[in-house]
Length: 85
Image 1 (tube, rainbow, N blue to C red):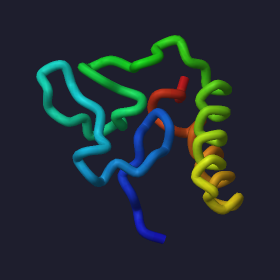
Image 2 (image 1 turned 90 degrees about the vertical axis):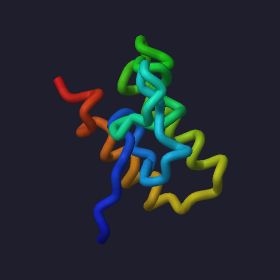
Image 3 (image 1 turned 135 degrees about the horizontal axis):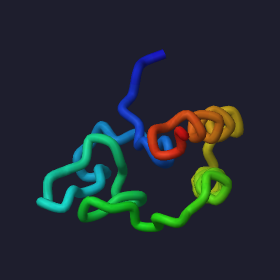
């Protein structure tokens, strides 16, 4: 399995610049996607881990992605930088 660069908040692949979030100086974030991070801050800073898992699962289901892919993605979320304690 290839190693992909994942958003450290939601687990979305962020290898392509147009899906990367933005830093306060306008540069692209190498850690977070545009759905989670903008202008150097999380779009929803009060979001809980459980809420993130629910949002990711719902969005992936809307995209009709395979159940195994959805399960693998949501399983990774608690291990990402944003959620590590």
